[in-house]
Image 1 (cartoon, rainbow, N blue to C red):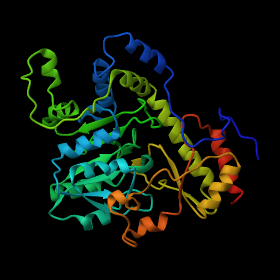
Image 2 (cartoon, rainbow, N blue to C red):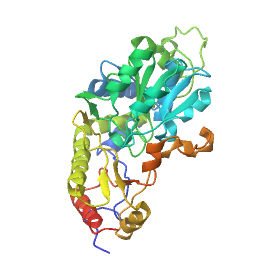
Image 3 (cartoon, rainbow, N blue to C red):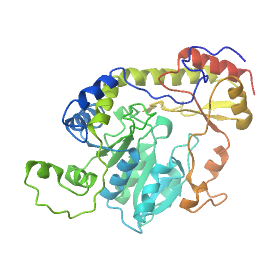
Length: 376
């Protein structure tokens, strides 16, 4: 086995590693010495700074997970039992599981060659019962938003962006999260910004913001309660979906370091693309666009003979995996119908995720490229 370069782990070059800000421990310690460790002023500050950085004029509501944010977005979009929602067949199950809570009918759409939503297939699935389209910016690569916004406007349906992978991604020079009806972000352990676990709901319509805050907190008007003017009644079903100040303090430190971290990941993504461009049997996904900026959360490639490649990489101390899977494989979503999603079928056994995170160096990428150039 070749010597492993510059990776501070005995496990070789691992697929994921948390990005912990250098001042995170100090920030948490400071919070622990205040009267607020639950939802308090740090959550408010995190929302305001995240909005100013990425989503303005849309409003940010911090929550306990990206899945919490998705569920709230679906509620605020007015989705009800029996409504249809078009969603990608390929995504983390978190995108689609909340619909099972709600009795909403899931209508899966096929993927394109880069594992994002196939907008042409989406257009063919719209019916009078369609109430929303959910897109997922897979790996940090923005979907074809112009086509989706056009469909939303033409059919008066909500466009909801699952941007769990896509903090810092841009579409036509605008940050993802600043234009659609709803967008969600994830601060789960291995995302660009982590709060241990957490998420952000982004809302375009200002009239929905106070409702979002209520249903984030059991249906209670928390601001009125703290001021002593709450009427002590709950009129809508709520949840315990809030972020806390301990988590928000880590998020704020991650936000402070974000530009450098994003630049590092994007640099590695470009280096992978350059070094693997002419390597037989592998294609880096998402390199061909000029109208969108990849957030580089995942480096996904389409490859020949994936199982042999995984073993080849493992034998050289390099971790790889599929990470996400098509959702129609799962019984909870009704199972798979053969041939229904031909593009997903074509790529299902051909995609793989390679290491890309804060601890990966240029030397690591060069080493991985050399291993791949040897063939497998």
